[in-house]
Length: 83
Image (cartoon, rainbow, N blue to C red):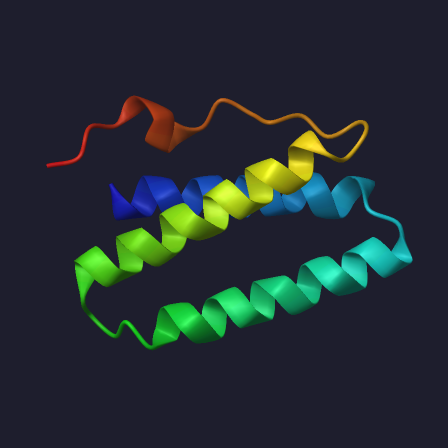
């Protein structure tokens, strides 16, 4: 499940970065760095990692919904059940 979520975050991030203007790219990169720093605090705690990754995916999807020309893709984690 976690690998599917990671894949989805990366795919949604790339879709947003592709359509972003320079100021949006800067903000997107900053928010990605913040996410990665927060996620690293989880260490090997899978529940924490999953929670942080789901939160980031939600944030990216919300941003995509507000960004013209960016699709909210059907993602791998949409089709994977939690164990």
